[in-house]
Image (cartoon, rainbow, N blue to C red):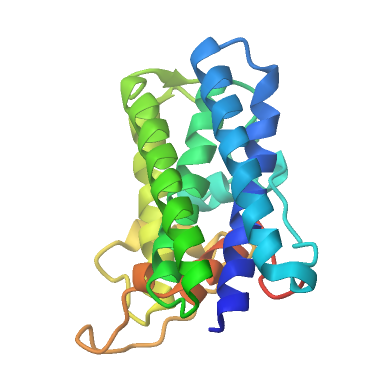
Length: 235
C-alpha cells in the first residue's frame, strides 16, 4: 500500500469514530459524554492533519456509523437476529459495546499503517495518532469491563456475554482474512456466515505462512469494509 492509501484508510477510520462519538452527545451518562467529547476533539485534530497530508487525494470516504450497521454486526455475532434489533445508540452501555468493535480496529489500523509508511511527515503524524487511538480504545475497554455484569436490556444477557460474542466474531474475521480456518470456533464461524457482508469461504493456508492481519492495514481495512462501516478506496 502507498502512503496515500494508508493515510486514506486511517482517515476513514477516524471519520467513522468521530461520527460514532458524536451520537453519544444525547446520553445522560456524564462519564461517557465527557470522554466522547474529549475523544472527538482529539479526532478533529487528527482529521485535520491527515487531510493536510493527503491534500487533494483525501476525498470523502464512504462511511456509515448508523445503528443499522451495528444491528447487523450483533446479529452476526450471535448467529441470529436479535429481537428487538440491537440499537447501538439506545443506551450508553449499548454505545460502549458498539465502540468496542470500532475503536480497537481503528487503533490496530493506525499501528499497522505506521509500520508500512515511508514518508517522514506521515510517520510522525501517524505515530501520534496511533498513541492517541490506543489510549481511547483502552479507556473505552475499561468502562466496558466495569459494566461486565450489567444486563443488556431487554436481552437478559450480561455485557460480558455480549463482549465475548463480539470478540469471537472479530477473531473469525481475522482468521478469514489471513487464510486460516476457524475450525476451533464453530460458533464464531457460524456467526460470520450470518453477517450480510462477511464471506463464508475460507482458503486453507498453513498457519506458518498465514499473515497476521494486525500487521497489515489492508486486511484491517477489509474487516471494516465487511462489517459494513465503509468501502475502502471508494473516496
